[in-house]
Image 1 (cartoon, rainbow, N blue to C red):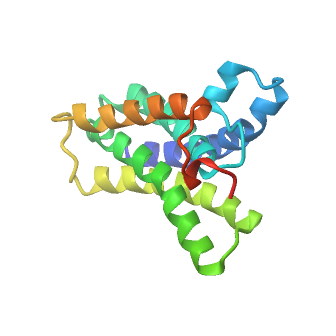
Image 2 (image 1 turned 45 degrees about the vertical axis):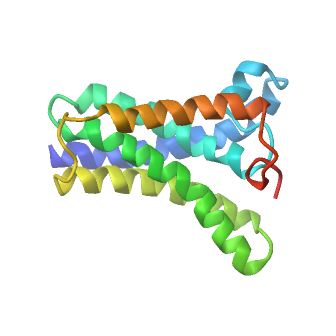
Length: 169
């Protein structure tokens, strides 16, 4: 099973990185259609770039749970923590480094996107391997947080609060 998990991790990292990159351009490529804006970046704000990590990781981890969840029960409870840690690492790292440098650098921003994906997988796999995540007990809270985060992405994409997180840096 370990070999299968390693394969799924490598494949997942590649697929989520490609999907997130595609989502960065999807809104413009589709003529700025509403439905693509819900899942893809509609501007250059940090909030919109968090979606590039969140939606591909969520889709892949759900796929993984459906494929491997019966053989790796901790996958179901570890996955939401991976999604949330990967997604919320983006603003933490972005605002830390721009706070230190006083500006942002596009190459570093791309690296933060990839780091967010990596941290999502790292968190998920660490919780599985350390058996620190309950196998299937109490999965309501973490998955509820994932759903709530997704709803916030939908709502705040077109009705963003007046906070720096929602404006172009």
